[in-house]
Image (cartoon, rainbow, N blue to C red; front, top):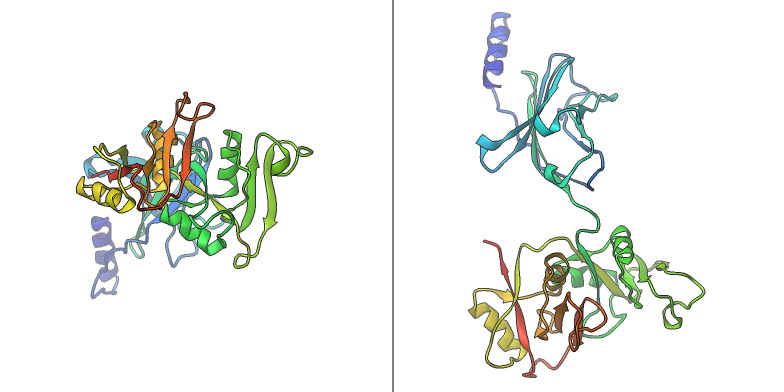
Length: 338
């Protein structure tokens, strides 16, 4: 790119023009793009002040690794000439629509396609470099869990629901995420906020206390509710666990404050509810010991149902919000990846 700029400057100087300074192309703000496995996805890239890309302009796409020596070429385009490379061959195409920008279409994406991509457009006058992060993740890879605070059921307006999920290391679930969780067997009789401000709940076993038996299994809805005046539970969603949830071996039961300090003394922090659900669902964590979590609740994760440990179903078992001065429980800690 440097040599092309130098050639351009020399040519313009010989033609009677001059440049007092050449400014390197700016790095654009990184864009995040999300897709599910098997989908087609567009990675956007265009010159910021151009109506289109003229013939002869060079466009190069690279998948960027932490070690620049391991970068992968994706596509190079120069006018009518285009070439794709490696695993991207025959499934990456320029978006030749009316805008004629440098965007590309990747077909049949997989989780291996996740990562950072760099787009370079070089025309010698207005060059640009843009970075796009692609996240390919199945809608059902994460875990949806219902949440209500220590004050009781149906106590959260929408803003409070958003904050409650954030406090537990998660976000408010979308309808698609709740629907996938329902298909996976989630059955919950309390209605909760979703991120579109609707209030819904998933039922796999219809029964009288949960909307009656006249309707079959499904995700039942109250529709869109007033964000400030409506009071419900919330469905939270967490997609990953960037660390480890573990039971802290202690000789004695702890109060809540002692539990918090014990995790700190172990170089960790007391685990959040979202982290507990992620460890249970995504990592198969199983432990038949009730322990404090960061919100003051006491829970334990069971993936192998057995006598005295959630005998009928795999679940994160909820004991409640006991008196924080009570010395009846251990603690689950969370240690982030280094």
